[in-house]
Image (tube, rainbow, N blue to C red; front, side, top):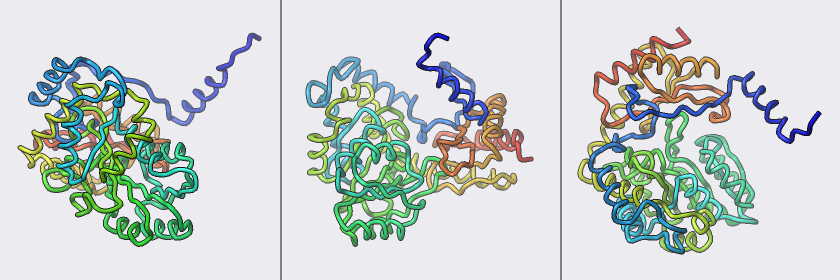
Length: 380
């Protein structure tokens, strides 16, 4: 038999198929005709004419790409403008824009920890946080979900330099972290707090200023936040916000910042356009939350098991991974695009449909979506 160094891949593929965990790419056409409840476009801005015009203007002025890493040629005046406006809008001293939210989390977690320090990480945290913990060379204590007392015990057992890290809104079930309690624990134990606000920006807080602003913690001592530009702001990229000395430290030490090409000007321009539009139309944040609540109330009234949303994510339980895949496919066939979360995306092993509220959904569209999800449900 000829030597095949990749024959193990076939074994893994069969194992995934047997477990109902095969994933496939599904290129999205320009006009799918589907009602979108699967994307993270919470404010409905990704196709807004003001946002696309800002992206096009930035590309014409600055070119298609950033041309290099931020420390070489990839920082433009447009990047600095976005960083200044993001920091001011969210209530922090400074900001640093990176090429993705994933890169922002890796940058913050690895640069703020290291050998001999401790990371206390919520069991429900996003994969980018998990990977940051793995790359940090710090000790990591994974604590039960949304449990400030468990965080306190882990910090007390370490007694040295430490960082607690949590999502603000968890992407699977849409529930919010107990940020005031976590901040109090970190203050008492002398630890820093890092909050990934990817699903809070644009939805929570006054005018969509985020979960930390909503909790009265924005700009607080020892608090750093990361966020994405690809959800509520309808663009691409990520950012770290915090004290100026923390941001300066990341510029000098964060590998996903130093060695990565800067965010493309079009994405920077689009994010700026969205941020300025949100300032003009702060009611979009309120509407996104109202749509999420309406979806939850109507789904549960129809007899489905859903998690009460704290922001714009509505999670609906499925009986199995296979059932979730079929359910999502049946919804798509009926004209509704919904998310499908299965292991390993859901660490508790419970498969779900994930519906995302959008501020631009009408009452009729909400009712249609609920009707389709109920009608195609595998649980009767």
